[in-house]
Image 1 (cartoon, rainbow, N blue to C red):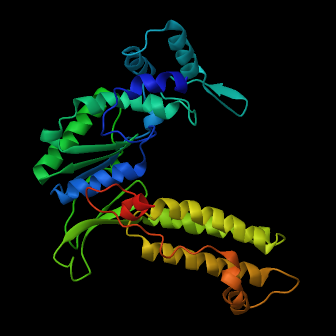
Image 2: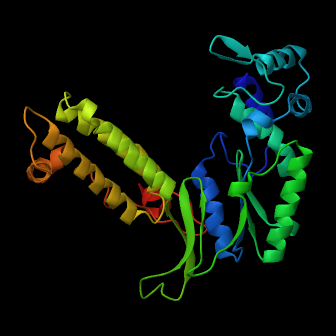
Image 3: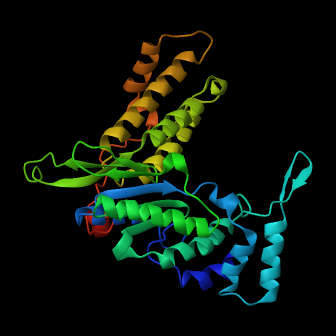
Length: 325
């Protein structure tokens, strides 16, 4: 179903939509924030659609699909998918709203439905909309424009049978020394350059959010848990490297050097604790850290230093260095 529907609707999707689309990524959306902030849009409307995947009305979703699809076989199959329901504890629960949770076609169906929001958004009047599926940010020039944009979002979402999540909805003014906002795993904040050449400039910096850092620490703690003491150290290091490569591969496109160093040091610390507990008798944590530090290449744990590519306005998000490679 996704293979059939995606090319048809992808042709009409707008540039403000980035989530779960071919040849588009979260970093493309993040680059828009850098560019618009550099152009003076520093009032940000931050929001998230409450229970988006489970709140989309089936009848309105089918109307959106029928705008481009007329094949009755495809439409009947899609209706059957939406009515299939979920089995919990041997009981089938059939909902009248929402798309199948975890279904491969669900992000596409969400984009099809929210495309109605994208196409009526007035960029000049209400600012630049950046949407990653159900996660929204609007970049505005003034507070008045941001307040009007938030009100417009509420009106448009209400017309779709949706509403913004109250706990995640707010207006943020990006200014030096002020607060920032979280979007797509990064914390964004306006800062001043630290080098002599950039000391007169303020720019939108980003680094992993507290939630993302806590997730990384929790995952590292799971990999080095007491329940895995019977495994070989090489397997623990391999699992740590797999996670660190993926986590750093996403977050290195930002001003993330300090945080990446902290996460790598935490992985070394947890590996040392795991080693000190392994064996027939407990050893001091200091013994474990010596084993890690004195071993060749820190027991093979990957190094994250030097992998960061800071974002730049109006440049491809992968940076000049990667483009040359």
